[in-house]
Amino acid sequence: MPSPVPSSLPHRVPDLGAMVLLLAVARHGSLGRAARDVGISQPAASGRIRSMERQLGVALLDRSPRGSRLTDAGALVTDWARRVVEAAEAFDAGAQALRDRRDSRLRVAASMTIAEYLLPGWLIALRAERPGTAVSLLAGNSAAVALRLLAGEADLGFVEGLSIPEGLDGTVIAHDRLVVVVAPSHPWARRGRLSPRELAQEPLILREHGSGTRQVLDAALASHGGLARPLLELSSTTAVKGAAESGAGPCVLSELALGEELSARRLVKVPVEGVRLRRQLRAVWPAGHRPTGPARDLLSLTAREPDGA
Image 1 (cartoon, rainbow, N blue to C red):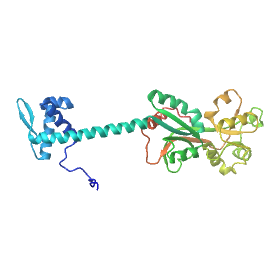
Image 2: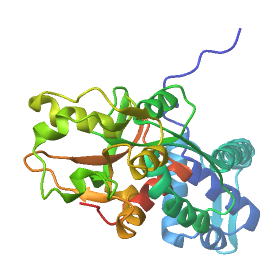
Image 3: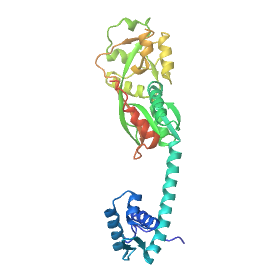
Image 4: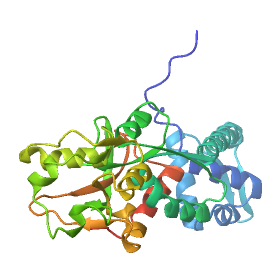
């Protein structure tokens, strides 16, 4: 049967730094040279060896003007220390191998708006810092991102919406506005302003349930009668924009996604008074597991992004 695992180290076992110092003394035959080798002063090295001797209850060195020589007990302790230090070095090498394996890839899951309009810049910056890390990106709605993280299929996620999905921790990285847009030929293009009830009663081209855009819009219009039955439900921002540009009807999308269409006047913004169409963009990860390695570095890059508020 395997030996029981102790709950703590025996109190007479010296720390690893003291063992490394003892090995240096054995190697150099001099406490002064050993101190320089491990990067401490000679008085500090002498104090550490004396502390080690008191802890073990035996003399380890015979000190003389010509140098320091191991006692018989010191030679035996040095042999034991060498095995401990070699085991520690093997442990450290194994831990480094695990970190290297972790750092060789990064799996990111992101909602559509963030995946299309923010992540490309972040990933280019990450590649400059970590050229050896292979990145895979899974794009979907915010609900799908949460499921991938909880299933262990992604290391870091990005979502839009009103709150952090259950089972995840996160931090706000930016703010975003939703805007109502129509084709220039639509009657609303000539309207100065809409009321929330008018927006709620109009059949819209919408993202699917589970998207952050739909979640915010549902909440914003709940007190105004709720959304009318959608004209179309589409699973991508590009498809929603295309349908709106064709004149099919109004849509509500992130301002981040509409820069080109608005500047070219392929779509026209329609202001809505008395309703808050603003949302938070978040980085998220499984609860209790703060990002490490490349995921931590990517998270730090998002903090440099100007706030879209």
